[in-house]
Length: 331
Ligand SMILES: C[S@@+](CC[C@H](N)C(=O)[O-])C[C@H]1O[C@@H](n2cnc3c(N)ncnc32)[C@H](O)[C@@H]1O
Image (cartoon, rainbow, N blue to C red):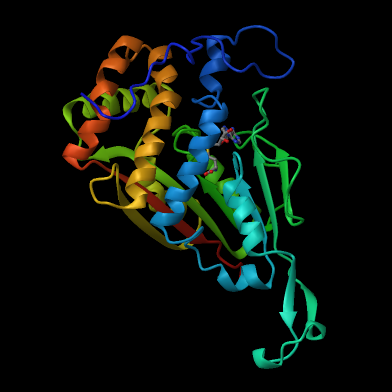
């Protein structure tokens, strides 16, 4: 049997009773519930999103693959869609602060405290997330870098509350479990609308068609894919992103796919983090499997009992895709 901790779901499953939206004091109707984000934004899910942030950073050797270095250093206006706990925006805003010490002298040897001055870097980072759950508010509201701003908005309520051509860089990550097949093209077109001509849109997502699966893992993954489809989501949307970005009007579309190990079998930190992410994901997605009646709690527990040994034995992998495209200039 597995050497990894066994998960018991009884304590956290609140089938039929979600974090209640503000102004509501009753259970959600089935219709309301089916419109909502498919996992609960509880503390464990926020932890999972932070683990996934570090996974993506390791896969793509940084926080973005779009050619944004120069503009971010010179000063760019950036938007993160569905920022969650905002690990990406917080890191980006610290990497590209709006105040920076710059040496006046060209020679480091002549450095003296009198020779430096402040230079304003104009990069600003905006993020939004739905605030459908109470508590918690997902994004930070207190300790924040000066160039970081968050607000409540819904990515599926279009138009988004931004002007045409407002942002140099629009970033959206892990929305495969948020946007329905019907919503994806509309939202991507909207991201193009709010991006400046010559600016970039970047989308990063996991492919929920995991590779090299053991028998119990395969059953769980197929169940998850079925439950996602029942909610109108496409588990393999990550593999379609290059075509979808081009369809939305972006040019110079570039994609990278990283096949990450799920486990410690290849001895990397990445593999350990992905396995940790899976442990969080089991908790996060189980209520969906039960609610959609795709699998019972008992069956989930039984298969999960083998999951964390199987990923090592079968050298399971999860693909992450990073795709960006540029908004064409009018001339
Ligand atoms: C998987 S998390 C990803 C968080 C963040 N993008 C990241 O990569 O770290 C998905 C986020 O989308 C948010 N979300 C779900 N539905 C949304 C919607 N309709 N509009 C805006 N955000 C939404 C959730 O609250 C959650 O914070």
